[in-house]
Length: 500
Ligand code: ADP
Image 1 (cartoon, rainbow, N blue to C red):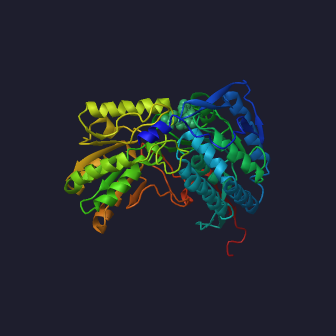
Image 2 (image 1 turned 90 degrees about the vertical axis):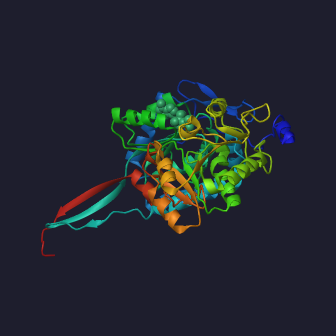
Image 3 (image 1 turned 180 degrees about the horizontal axis):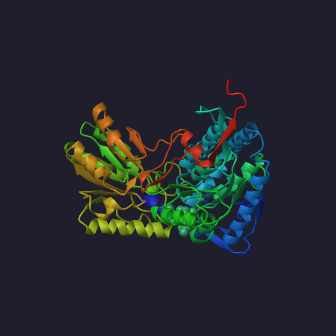
């Protein structure tokens, strides 16, 4: 690990070129109206990767006008569903063809291990696109019985121009979760990527056009939240908003939507998900899964299992082994093979995580391992484990979004249900037990959008994802995601001859 720490001093050169840095509006790469650019940084070093066109309200206006025209005049919403399906299928093929290039951009911009980007995330994006391609020609309304001489049917129509704002932790997957259902249903899109990670979505969008997407259907405006993001959320001509990010920003965009044109909003926000290790648990396996649930993606998952509740009977053994596992986690340059953890996304997150670590120490939790930066370049943080964590400590309440595991002890099921649910969040939970009654009790009692039993972070395209409580509104992925992008029109026709 000293060798790995030394190696982060000398970062590997990513074997990929940044070809797209401008805004993508109306099928063309263009500069921002203001001519402004911002820097996207390499989290391994803090050095500049590229200067990116910085979209603002004026650019959003242009993008929305183009998306509006593409929706109102076509061809996208009017072509056959089969044709839209084929565009998404060709896009999936192109994603596979450009797998390594997409993965390298993702790692460079975000800091996540390249092996994970190349073997899991980019293939998942292709899978998602094929899933939504499958839906494109299977979306249709119903024939409805009515009390009277009427023929009643529902038409499922695209909602119009979808505004989409995504975060930096899974840039490509968030792109896919958003554009997949929007495009399959025949909508047009104005997307704002996160300012930390604009690169991969620009390449993906270029490939989507290569696959035959008509110009103006997908417009990408890179830029900042309070400018470009707020302009999308408050635009009078955006018909629907989908947002993924922090709960605080979710509140802002919901207000902007309400104050402008009451566009419907789906929100995928923060979490403080419990991972519950029951008394029958095989401790080695529980430790490994709880470790993955928290540390995956540098701890930067909205659904991270960030409150590890362990039954008192297995607690001591669990803590000891969780500490050993964290000590063994391979941290280093994410372009190196065998690396499990790269740097955090940026200096803000890095500082915030270290602040939470200090708060944990000050509030009396036991720091088992980690607790400081790794190496002395970039935003790496040592895998950190706290034991003896109490529910009212800040580290047990706030979303840390970093590699900090907090372990809490519990005695019985009713107690852990009450404590697990006593949070403003309700995104996900992990349950580790082979007792079917315990599993059934927990899966029904936990007020969360996803319960993973003896697994975690399973994200198939067909599995719906979303939050209870302040973790959000609505569901992404799966059949449920389609309704976010469809209007239902009831058509009631009087029957001339009711006898038939
Ligand atoms: P995070 O802490 O994950 O960066 P944010 O909620 O700040 O969470 O960011 C998620 C996305 O929301 C990003 O694309 C960001 O630029 C955008 N965003 C931030 N502030 C606003 C805002 N006031 N209005 C619209 N979008 C915003």
